[in-house]
Every structure is written in structure tokens, then in C-alpha cells.
Image (cartoon, rainbow, N blue to C red; front, side, top):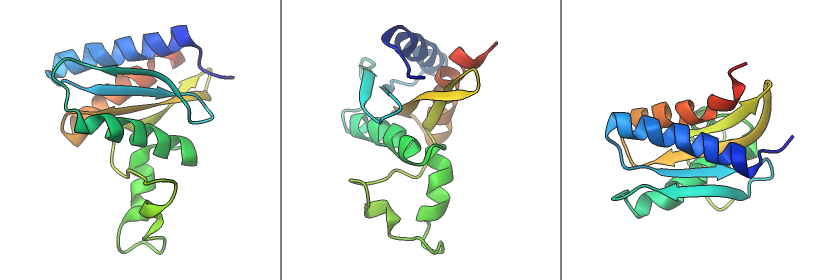
Length: 134
């Protein structure tokens, strides 16, 4: 199953609502299961440099079918796979990239950047969970 445009818009909307609650001007990227951009929103005053980070957080999650934060465990210098960060046109190994689930199946990925890492995770979680609530 693949995320469709309407679902992508719902995910962006819920992420935006959470970003507003947290007073964060975020970049919100939605990728399909193949890792291609499906939707993108740059909130007013969101950092331009965070656009690429949001997309790469989602891309990192998509490449390993887990959160970007989980991938980050393998990017640490003490990990046996250190150096992996330079693969796949660059990986981002901190929180804010998550799988989007529907009926417990991955249908896409969300990446958020613009706030503190903990804020990005809260925003991504709000978006990622909207379709998997039943």
C-alpha cells in the first residue's frame, strides 16, 4: 500500500498543528514507500537550511524502514558501521524521520526539521500517527 495525496495532506496538516502548538516553524516532508517526495510544506519563517534536513530524515527512515533516530545508533563513532553516514547521498541519524503507518503497514515516511530535535520528533509523531488510529 502506498500513501496517496489526500493522506499526505492529512499527515502534513497534523504535523503543522503540532508545530504551531510548539511554536516551531517547521519543514515537513512526506515520501512514498519508494522514497520519492509526495508532499512538502515549508511553514512561514522556517529555516531554508532545514528543508534538506527534513527530506533526508524521511529518506533515512525510508532506506532502513525505521526511525532516523534508530539509524543514528549505527552512525556513532563507536559503532562498527561508522562511516555509513556518507552512503546514500548522506544519512541523517537524529530524531524527526519516521515511517507513516496505516493498518500497521508502512505507507510512507515523514521528515521534520526546524525545531530542537525533541520538537521535530513530537511533530513527526503527530503526523505519522494520524492514519493509524483505528
